Length: 315
Image (cartoon, rainbow, N blue to C red; front, side, top):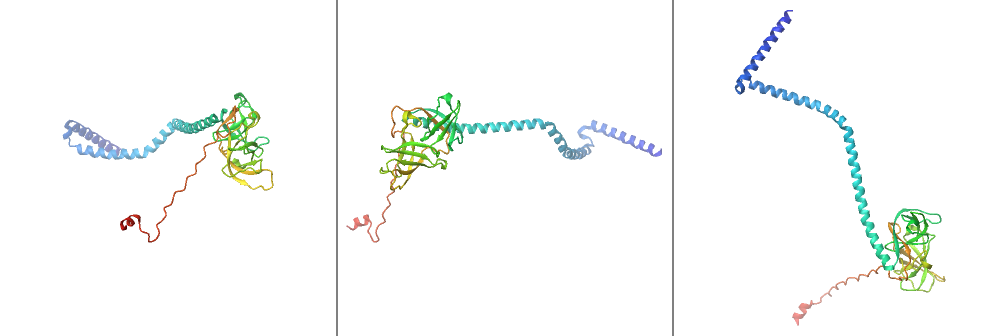
């Protein structure tokens, strides 16, 4: 009991002292003798507050993150979707520019030959019964496409239509082993047949019917044309001869040519809806590349020879 009584007395004294100190501090203001004590206390409590904040901040941040997690995830998903859309738009814009350039070139080629063409895009490369190398186009019978129509691009002959659905069609390439195309040498009446050899369209075989007719590397081949322009119209560039095979005693001559059209990377093509009224002959062929003359090398002067200026002075 005595300890409890003593504790109450001490507590009362402390409370009274605190009240007295607060009263004196409030009335004296800036001249209060308790200013240093108050500053020291503020410093101590500031340190304690910062320490407590350092300890509790990760915990409060964790719970705040949990509270905001659904919204943050939705925002991340929206940003990812927006980035994907922007990338797709950029790729589509680049493809549109490339295709626009290809279409412009192809229309120029068709104009020189007088071909009425229907532009199309290659949407797949696939085999079809009887043929290994064929492509699917995004145009069909609803657009006026029929089997046995010529397919070309800005560079040259691509193939012919073999199947025509309502909205899509299938074209077999001239590189297919089952393909045979009537062809003619540039600037001559000599004709032959171009056969596909597979090999991803990098080379085709040209068999000239007259074994005595001249044929050499660098010669250019165009389509000879079929009756009523089906399956091939006349005058479409086919390729450039790279090698002539010696065939002594045979009735035909064989050469191997590189196609003008890149049959491994087809994109924009054209289906020839109507053949030209006149055979364009060689008018559709691209200009020949001019051979660059070799640079003349300076002849070094002979040993002991007098330079021209010194020779004039000696005279």
